[in-house]
Image (cartoon, rainbow, N blue to C red):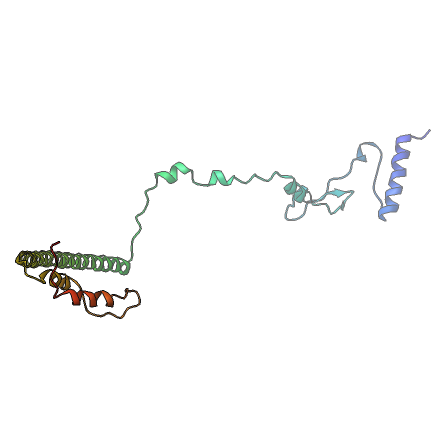
Length: 210
């Protein structure tokens, strides 16, 4: 009676031989194990490729291992960045101003100071001139008032003297002196020609005491 295991292995050997076109040596007993893959002259690593029944399957086991190796996570940018406390402790470098800009600022400052001094000098001159003009105006006003007072007193004395004479016809004559007999051609002035003529006629007439 035949062994079922040996028959199964023989059948599988025939099937594989038909697929690959090459016989596969399976023997019963302890020699049924697959022989190890031959090592090259350079001592190639057994993980470089998968060998089945003495034939390279073309599978790169080393590449698969490298692909399966975990990729180290990239460090966070926060961890790589400088902490704020370190930045705060760093001394701030003073900003150096260019020489041309510094000279320009000094010239501008000097020019503005000179202009301010000139402006103050002109203001002082204007104050002095205004003070002198004001003093002159007050002096002229005082003089005009004094002259007006003198003229008024003189006119008052003459009026009193003429009033106290009491001569005939003097009353109308004094009235005629107070009137303006110069003709004025103006539309806004009332015609006083008849009144002037009457006063001139009465100028030589004695005023009755009755």
